[in-house]
Image (cartoon, rainbow, N blue to C red; front, top):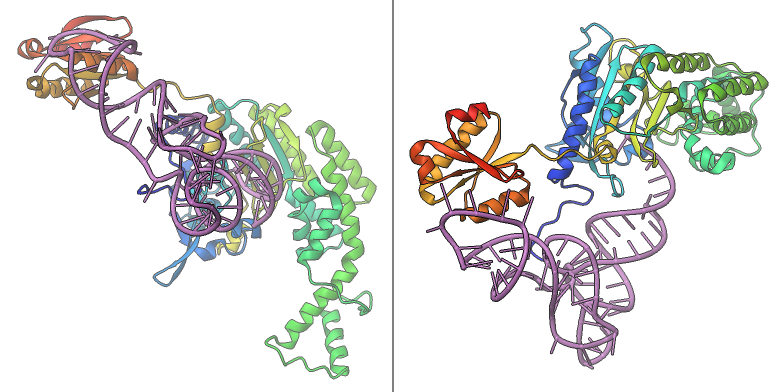
Length: 482
RNA sequence: GUGCCUGUAGCUCAAUGGCAGAGCGCCUGACUGUGGAUCAGGAAGUUGUGGGUUCGAGCCCCAUCAGGCACCCCA
């Protein structure tokens, strides 16, 4: 079709039927958030690009709409949490904690469009700033479910994992921060392709280890660095040729060499994680199994106790424990998560909601001191799509002037009806009454107010009930008694 | 980012490589004070777009745009 202009790819026109459903779902959710004491905020759609540079994670960072305008590096927000914490750091550090904040509005991600996957969609969510584990985590989890219940979404499944637990274990296995991260963010892949898939990925991401060179065992970082510097100096290798200074060169070399040392630990970690991922299911069965696995490996994770505490609180929040499934294979590509993470899927596997704990993000955004925080967000369009359809819109009244002479009186009648709280509109096309009636019937209007010369002169109207197919004459004053 | 399927009137869809059609919807009238019906008429298309093959392309080929499906990831 030439001459028409299509919506931009991935953008979505929301027509009345869908909009009704979205508005209904949003109202139901927001009523829950308000009932739990969350205060709404609204924040800019455009943020400094820098806000998303560090903690977002490569996967999502690559999907941020970025642009330069007037010499500024800007971005359309791909999620709300960074904005909320930026605003917290800027304006709300004087507030008593915990601070319960809620939000609703569009976010943008450059993804391949599919059904219910749009490049602009609406997130509705909350952050509990200054809310420590385990209680704030349990509150968030329970609230996420309460919102879905309020929206009448049935059959959803809550999947809970814990990034902090994984990191704790990997730390005990002696893995560097960097390697821990790579493994943690590979968990989703692990579930699909097993350890080998992650090993493969790890190798792709890393530079090749240096063959044939080994550090003397038992040195800490500083000692090893000094040893390397001395060795290179003794070999009369000039380190000042490139753009890096000698310390940087040595640090990089050290990382490569350490990677060799790490190989054994990485293998141990991979097999541990593979078994951990396999242990998914109901908490009652899974938690003891995890504990047994850790005992067997000679590891201990304080986070396991935290996770147990979080899950233990859910019943007291009124959440059906049957809905909850432990799953350490949760990905959650946002790299700022530090503790419990969760996702909620509908019965068909469509993700409706996601969130988790991010204790370092406030500090990373320049906040004074570290503030523990946890939050989650729904995808409003998805929630609305799986919620029961919205009921028919409010029944409207069509005011039908019999002739053009009756039009201004029809407007007065419509004003009276609206003052009474009814939704009234007046035919603007000057159509014959018969057509207005059939039009009103076809649109599903409940009533037609007919005004002609007779009604105009007696300041009355004929009130026709389309369903009952009967009518009576009312004075304008009698409208108030309808 | 990867693989696959599909684009014809507002909508749902027809049309062997040979005249672009139907149903629904929309508009007008029958019908200037009473119903979703009926009847008559009307508007509506560069077959997503751009190339190519062919005497001839909605149909075959290439590209591109858009939608969908399965991945990846996410809400």
